[in-house]
Amino acid sequence: MAKCAYCGTIIVFGGKKDGGLRYCNSGCWQKGAPVRLRRQVEEWLPDDAVQEHAAAVHQGKCPRCHGPGPVDVHVSHRVWSAIKVTRWSSRSRVCCRACGAKAKLGDAVFSFFLGWWGFPFGPIMTPLQVLRNLAGLLSRPDPSRPSTALLCLARESLARDFLREQQAGKRILPHAGPAGLPPDAPAGVD
Image 1: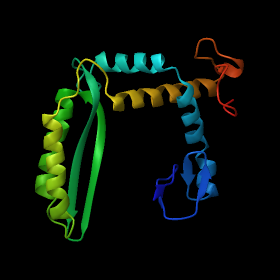
Image 2: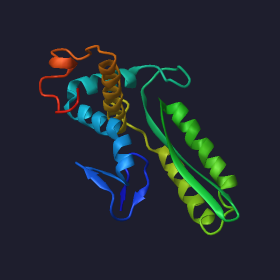
Image 3: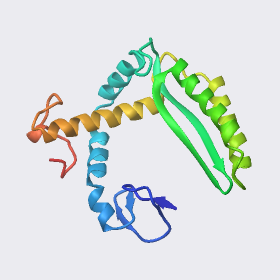
């Protein structure tokens, strides 16, 4: 089953396709124009610019505690339950290892105490989310280079910055073609 690229609703059948993206209806397709545009921009961003941006974030200070890096993407998992309601989620944070460990440990404790109380999913999801956090605490990302997740965030960030500058009428990429776009930019971006 596919998810709507705009609102995230699961599409069982039907919907509207545009390239590799799928939307629940024409309304979501129209609202999803910025998503399509950002994906087009992401495709032609130079890999060295993305690597450079990710390396700057990776070697910079932690945005949470302002301590030294390396900074990377850390994911924590939590579950909360009450009688017939169980909610679970995963949260990504760009931070140093210490802040990531605090988030994982905090979500593991939260889940351990508040995850069991919903039937039937509380007893199923609680050990799963606690174990995912503990596994995350034990695994260590390579401190010498940015992770794939950080590279993806860097690409998205550069695309957003480019589109913001493009809307303001400024050129931000060197060797830009007409309207501030690289000569090989996808059609319909300007």
